[in-house]
Image (cartoon, rainbow, N blue to C red; front, side, top):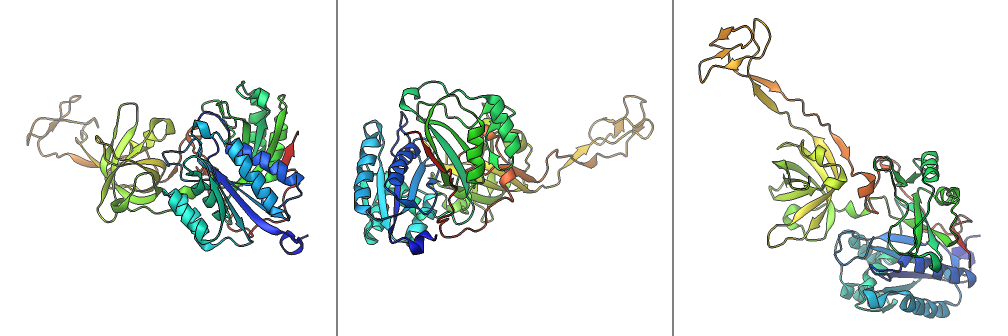
Length: 454
C-alpha cells in the first residue's frame, strides 16, 4: 500500500532537539519513547526516525549535536502534538542546561527554505531568531523551553531529507534501574560480528587500541549503538551481541552519520568564521612543526594568497604524516574553524587530510669517492673534498643534487577510529555512498526497525 496516496491522513513532521544535558538524558531516547506512543496510536511512519548530526563545532552542544525528526501519517494530529509538547517539556533536562525546541510541519513536501536552513546548519551557526522567523513565515507550530536554542536543530532536522548518502544506526536503550551501572558487552562478539558484517557496519571496534566503540561511557540511557548501511544489518548485529542486560528496547534511525555532510561546504580563507566547517584546497606555506603534546602545526595558503594556521592533534594518529609535508605540497583538508583568542589567531582543526600533489625535494650531498665509493668529506670552502677511508682528494668536485625520498604518498588520510566524530566518513565508505533515494522510504520500512519491552 502506498501510504501517501491511499492513507486518508495528514503528514506530520516532528522535529526536536536539545532535550539532554551534559549530565543526563538523551534526545534519541526521548524519540524512542515518543515513537512507542505514536505506534500505539496507529501512526504510520513514512520514514525511519531521523538522527541528524548538525555542525559539530557549535560551542554550546552537549555531546554529538544530534537532532531528531519523526515523519508520520496520522489522523488525530492535534492530540499527538499536545502529547509530544508535554513529553518534550517533562522529558528534557531543562534545569541542568537543556534548551529544547520542537517544531511541527504539516504537509508532504518540505519547503525549500527549510531545506536550505538545514543545509547551512550542517556547517555554520544559526540563531534561534532565524529559526523562529522561518517557522512563522511558513505557519509552523513550535514551542521552546529554556533559551530555546533547540529550535535551530528542530527545524534543521525537518529540512534534512537525506535523499543522498545516509547510514543507519540501531540504538539500544537501558531500563532506568540500570542507568549509571557498567555496560557489560562480550568483546569477542563485537569483534566477530564486526568482521562478519564488514563493510556494512562500521566503527564497532578499534583494533589498534583494543577498544569497543559501540558503547558510550556516561550515565545516559543509551546502552549501545550499531552503525551500518541498512536496517537489517544493524538490527541483526545488535541481536548477535546476545546481551544479558534486559533492554528497554531499541530503534533504528536513518542518519547522516559517517557521511562527512558537515564538510561539503568549500571554505575561503579570506572569509572564514569561527565554529564553521568545510573543506579547503591549498598548499603548504610553512614547514610543519611538532608542538608540545605531539600536535603538528603548519601554515596553508589558498589560491588568493591568504594564509592561515592549521593543526593536527596527536590523538588522530595523523601527526606522523603531517610532519612529512613540505612547503609547496598541494593538499585538501576537511576542517573546523577554532575561534581566535588573545594569544592565538583562528586555527583550522583538521579532520581529514588528502595529499593531492607532492613537490620534489632535493638534498645537496657531498660527492662519492671515485676510488672506494664512500661519501667524501669537505676540505673547506673552495678546497674540494677528501675521502676519510682511502684519502683520495679531488679539488674539482662539487656537492651533488639528490632527489629526497619523501616517505609519504598522495592519497587520503583519516584519523584513527577512536578519534572519529559522528559525522566522520570511514575510509571504507568512500565509494559506497548512496547516490539517490526516493522522497521518503514510505511503506518499505524494515519490519523489525522498532522494539519496546514495555
